[in-house]
Image (cartoon, rainbow, N blue to C red; front, side, top):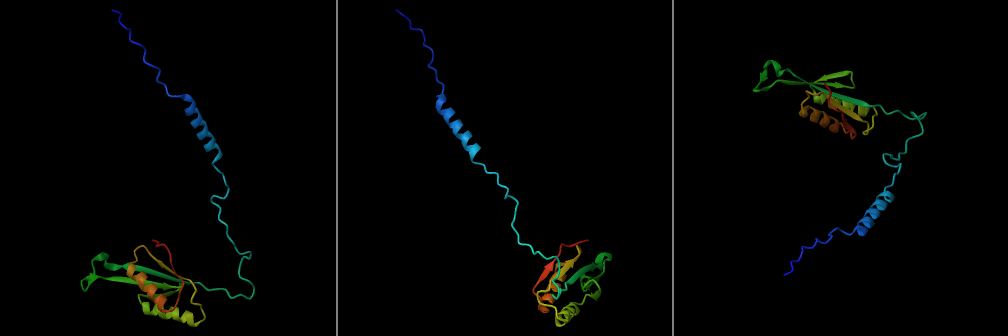
Length: 157
């Protein structure tokens, strides 16, 4: 009896030609597709060519509103079961109105009567300790004085 010798396993390597074709196609694709435009990070703008007010043009006066809150409850003072909080309003960096938001509204209306437009910017600048309710009341006073351009700054220390 003749015993067959085990044969070698067949060569099971993947066909290399299609793999090389796909590799070259990917290489060509990634070389040709990127576009390096200089427009990234570039925004077109139309800036004015003049640098200041034109002769005869009325310069817009900016109204600034600064609201600060001083919390005196740190020493444990309470009035009617609530913290005793006070707000100090400084208008146009010169007028100290105390905590009277009606006086703030009256001062803003006085500026409107003096000729300021409703679009005159009003900047409300609270401190970090300022309560939100005081900022809202200052906003309400500006709206009651019929101003439409009311802005808020980032709270400062």
